[in-house]
Length: 412
Ligand SMILES: Cc1ncc(COP(=O)(O)O)c(C=O)c1O
Image 1 (cartoon, helix red, strand yellow):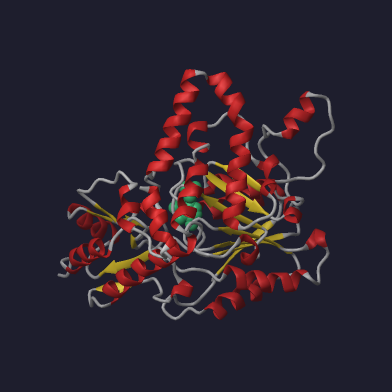
Image 2 (cartoon, protein in one colour):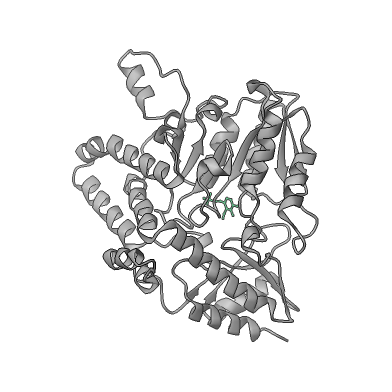
């Protein structure tokens, strides 16, 4: 089936039905929420997990010793290729976005008198990682509004809002690529350019470190790590990339890695050097930030196949497909008088998450009523919560039509 996908792609058309067949999704439901929630494993990932599991169950010691370094190196290389980075060692492998955020903020060298800026709409894991770091380091943090109104927001407004907030003591800016409350996409690259401009006037020790929770852009959007212009890109791989559940990564620039210290002892060259009485590696990198200890290796090592799966379909094709389905769904919702759409229609301001409200119903009621009609939506876990559809690569316009019909029927 993968060959069918690849063959079609050569003719610039992906066989989306073949893509859907890679997933074992229950056809009794329309799965319009899971791409942003937690991955269903596509066949290549499932098979790789089974292969590694079998190997580990048959001979845990030998299978681990034979595979641990080569698999991790292959995964880092595949991730670097996906993000168009030259140095795979600048990538740390984690279990989730949350773990990546926790590691980076905990590891940052920060002190009293310095400040972290975060947007009002960053996810709990991000805000909490910042709050905990501030408490332990003596640095302060400040939440700022990125825009006034999501229905009139512009790229320029968001860039200006960030830059306006920067003070001499601002040492870290934490942002989110695509907000999971509204589906709004942040102009990460443009903000990155503006931060670089400020950093030109600063010494390396004082420069702003730009940290991005990338989880709802990663696996959909096209920008490379360098194009995004951030210091650290943090993402889970178990959402839009459809990697094994319990996988994630941190990509950092070589210079940014020098501003953090390892948090959890890593099973890498450091351990080899110490146990063999050699000198520790001097330079910090993603390998050393990769938490050591044994993990669910059967899952982790199957991440390689997830990158391969995405590359086989094609990054551009995935981008086009997800945006096309989302545009279609948003237009349908926007046309309903009893629905308020909270996600911009513009492709530059949105990706795969659609947030909406139905007049006369709470968010919980909306989601429950849709689930009773076999349409899976989610509630966004924020102070102000909306219902969400998140069309992804395995959805079809026919499924979206059925979901729209169901929303239409919620009119009082
Ligand atoms: C913006 C954002 N960041 C982080 C997370 C947490 O992701 P993970 O499950 O990979 O820790 C979520 C959850 O969906 C999210 O919406």
